[in-house]
Image 1: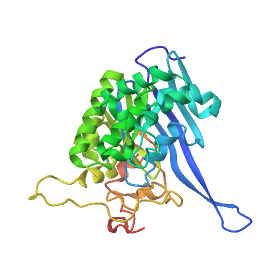
Image 2: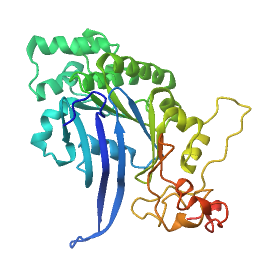
Image 3: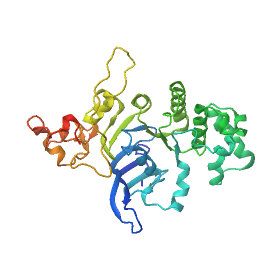
Image 4: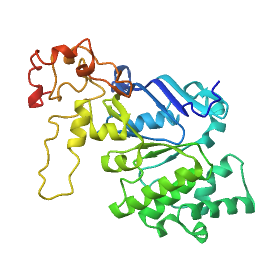
Length: 351
């Protein structure tokens, strides 16, 4: 039982989410598996923001939804601290999960499709209160108006419908819906990617302001590294369903250790017309339904060497401050990096 406030709010251990692939026809049988999330480990301290980053298809959104139990995990532990006790969300059924839903909420990517156009703003924001039987009548209206003001909207907006609002305002409605339950963990799934750049800054500032006031802990799923750098305390880099690097935001951006992390950062556009675009990765991202042998990144890795195509690297602690899954940092293999020949075709981006 966890009682100290210096303990993680969330501990994820060996988390996996696999989707079966079935053959066509009447006699359907399983012919493969999509390893969308594969053996993910991390800790999240109260009040911190963890960024989950990676290319499309890296598994970051699936990982976030599995943590919230919107998807049932295939294996692993999701240890969530609820007051003075710790519960494994992965082992709970729907009835046992219900009271914990108030403590975990999600902000969705698309503010247009995530709001029911047939419901007023007041009904949308108050729906969690109604579902959990926490407020009704005038008390429900009071709490809705209060939370609307917190996110920068006016109380009278509760009687309007979503079509009357801009994209940024709709996302504020989604944030209000997530916050009305006073959760401790909020997962923001690409929460600003569908918004204009100027509106993105407003929503990011709002998320930072309410984090302090509501004592929130965030998992921020994103592909925009400039946003991640601004809002996150730590960054977890995912590739083909696995974590390849986990470190503080400063370490990730100033001294990335995994070749994939370096490639992601090199691909960030520079706001300077005189700076040429740096080289990006060749080839396609690994298919989670047909992963290559060894390290999933090795067919695209410019630093690939002898063990990379044969042995899958473990997520190892280096200098006691960060985690990296790369043979370059494995004492058992890194001495070979300077002498072994690269795997044929990897520098050309061959599959």
